[in-house]
Amino acid sequence: MKRSFVVPISLSVVLLACVLPGVHGQMFRGDNGRTLQIEIVQDPPCPLTLAVQHVDLRPDPDAETILLRLHNGSNKAIRAYVMVSGGNRHPNMHTAIFPAKPFGADAILMRSVWPNSQEHYYFFFDYILYDDGSSCGRNAHARSGQIAKYLETRTEAMMLFEAIAAAYPQGGEIVSAVRNGGGGGFLSFDNPGPPDPGSEVRASKRAYQGIVTQLRQLKEHSTEAQEIAGKIEIEIGKRFQDDVSPREKEN
Image (tube, rainbow, N blue to C red; front, side, top):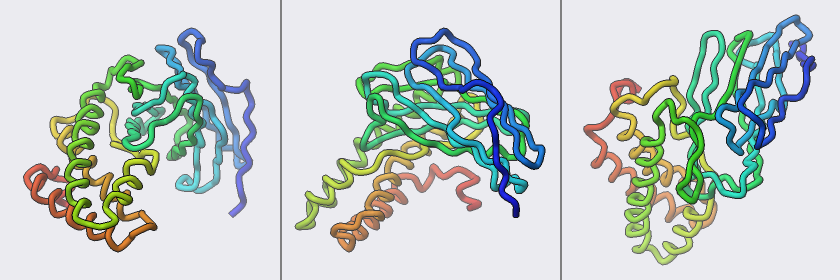
């Protein structure tokens, strides 16, 4: 398959932290004639900004990618953010949370998005939660409660994890590795709009599952970490057995 090279044909969409609310657009064209317009909306202005790092418009729609560059231009770490992406047919909500290590001040993250053959895409931040408890954004999609529930349950899950780990000679080192390791992952990836009534329950469940994932990935004391992860999974089954969504039951 011939690789598609993309050439930006407008000004850079790098957004500064203190600009007025507005839309910054950029058009990309692949060597197969495929075009994609990308707009980044900064309204209201927040010091978390977006830029298009790279676009790959290959002939196969499943291989197309948009690589976004996120820059925390504030002097405060970010605990969570909600980014909306949309266009012609496939709007999505990206709720990312950093339970162990926050997204630091002046730090940069790269995020990939798949355009799914759309001709137009836009991005904006709806809500940003800083590590000191302050926030920025309209929160029009009402995900602040979902994030708060995740963080609250993460504290409870860590207490359970520490109690289980205390029975192991290497428990203290394992707890430190989980507490200090990892950046974060998606809390949810779903349709824009207010979350459904079960979203906070699923957020709570993910708070426990996030610790299990970290334990499964530990290299040091891996045998003990796997055992602890298994015990936490048993507790997850007990605590959330009646709170599984119909889709989760089908899967």
